[in-house]
Length: 81
Image (cartoon, rainbow, N blue to C red):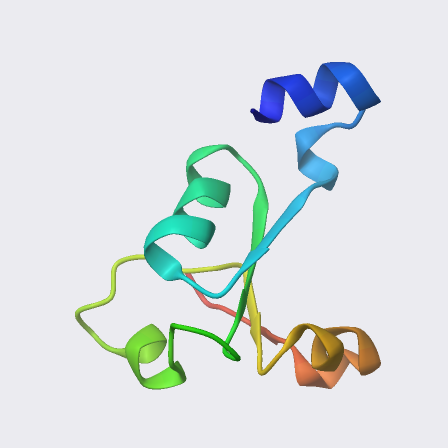
């Protein structure tokens, strides 16, 4: 899918950010395909689950919701990998 987007629209995958509310699908898809990832906490995944020691999937960024991410830099937290 990412190869298709790259070829059809001439977009480098380094400039694509996968946004989603699930660690095990959305964020994992982004990570597995060399994309940046943003987890929004307004859906399925909670901050507690994200920060849990049992969690092995780490997004590049996370925010309460997509609007918060774009309102201020401080509203999105860069995940430490």
